[in-house]
Image (tube, rainbow, N blue to C red; front, side):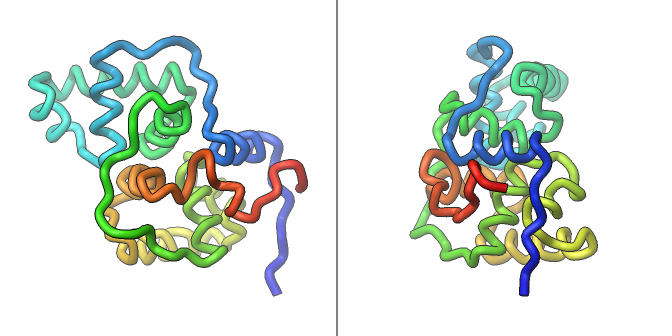
Amino acid sequence: MTMIVPLPDDLQVLLRTVQTGTQALAGPLSADELRVAGLLVTGALNPAIAHELGMSEEDVRRHLDRIGQETGARTRHTRANCVLAAGLVPPPPVTGPAPTLSAPERLLLVGLATCETWERTAVVANLDLRTVKPATQSLLRRVGAAHRTHLVGLAYGWKLIGASTAALGHDSAGS
C-alpha cells in the first residue's frame, strides 16, 4: 500500500502551476532570451544553443541566468518548465505517440518538471530519496529523453504535462 504524504505549500503551488499551465514572470523576456529558451526546451546544451544562435556560450549562460531571474527557477529543467507553462515558447516537436505512463511515473514526471532538488522530487513523486535517481534514469531511458530538461520538453510536446494535467490524478485543492 502506498502512503500519500501531504505536500508543503510551495510544492502545491508548483503543482498547480504545472496543472494549469500558468506561470507568473517577474518581467518580460527579450527576443534573445526567448530564442535561448526555445532551444533549452528541446534539451539542447549550451554549446549547441550557442552554435545554433550564433552567440557565445557566455551569452547563452547570461540569457539562461536572466530566464532564471524572471521565472524564479534555478535549474535548467525547472526553467524549461516555467517558459513552457507560461506559453512563452512552444514545446519541441515530438515523433510518435505519447508513452503511457503509470501513476507513479506521472508523479515523478511532475516532480522532475517542478522541483529543483532530488529531495523535493522525492516528496512529489512519493518515493524514497534513494530511489528517485534510479527511477528517473529508468523513465529517461523508457521515453528516449537525454536528461531531465529534455524530458520536460518532450512531456509538454506529448501533452503529458501542461494545461491538461488534471489527468495526473493529483488534486491540487486537496492535500
